Amino acid sequence: MNRNEPFEAAFRDVFEARFQSLFRYVNRLCGDSAAAADIAQESFVRLYQRGELPDDPRAWLVTVSNNLFRDAHRRTGRRKELLEAKADRLFDDAAPDPVEQLEARERRQRVREALAKLPLRDQQALLLRHEGYTYREIARALDYGEAGVGKLISRATRAFQRAYEDLVDASA
Amino acid sequence: MHLHDGELQRLLDEEPSVNENESIRAHVAGCEQCSARMEAMKLVFRETGQLLTALDESPPAMSADRLIEIAQRRHIPARRAPRGIAWAASVAGLVVATIVAAAIPGSPVRAIVENLFQDLGPESPQPTAPAEPWDAQAGVAMTPDGAIEVVFETTPSGGSIEVQLVETDVARIEVSGDPVGFAVGDRSIRVENQDATASYRITLPENLSQTVIRVGTRTVFAKEGSRVLQNEFDRDGELYRLAF
Image (cartoon, each protein chain N blue to C red):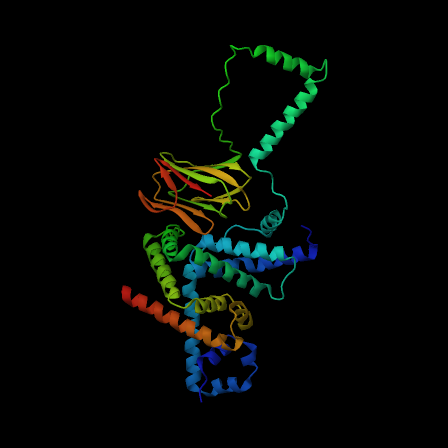
């Protein structure tokens, strides 16, 4: 494959600037670090195969990642998702203190459950905003009207907080 | 008339289309209720950001060079011939070359062929068929720290995975087929098998607290202690096998 040097240099710059953020976004969305790594990597491979950078690489990458996530989610199905969420818990980074480890695990589980109560598009909007995406990028990635993004994010934030607090109250 | 949440959120997020609108800014500055709502939204948004970090995990070790390599490999137009075909072609070529060389009077090859046929009398023992070979081209071994997660980057387009859980401290993967890479952690082996067609023999310690095998985004095997949570392998005694 012949690639010109300016493209490769630009690709490397995008990778350095965006890979970790894209992985974090997908990992938060799917709750499976191995799947998130696959999706983030595949998105960048496709960006390279494209041969030139799109106008907005950030929005382009996250759109591809969302599509890959949707396909993977459809294939694996709910049963696997639950199982993977359970298996994933087995590999939390080891905290030195068992109590801290337990608390971190419970908090993580609650956050995951609270997020899962939101419609997928609300989850995506919320997570993208917390990754620093602009409204225009979010609108493009989610195929949503830019004028409605502010409302979408405020609604998602409120719903997430309410769901999280309910889970905390339920466990108290 | 107060601002709605979407407008406040836009202002909070410093979206230009709202920030440029001085009348909205002026309203918030002069309206106690909207100002208080906006402060509350700011606080909740910050708390949400902190909570979301609970989901974060370390990103995979990946470089732009590696991704470029993967992308370029996918574009190689002609895949390497399957191993069986390549082997058969080599044997056929050798046979043809031998016949041609043996046909030349006085050639050393002719002498070797004549001696060979003299040795192969009626009493010559028939050669026994060799056992099915396991032609491992690569492998990796490590001692897992209490638990192991084996991750194949992508679902193989052919080949198989065989897993044996045995009494050992060492986790081992042997590969036969296209070349693959490995990334080894304290409790993980990542098989970098993008576009590789290969078969794998995996030996894992049977007494780990957790054992997980993933293929692409699928968890095909998960075991906690002696309890199997997930198994997509065919089981034959102590051998688990998954074909692709």
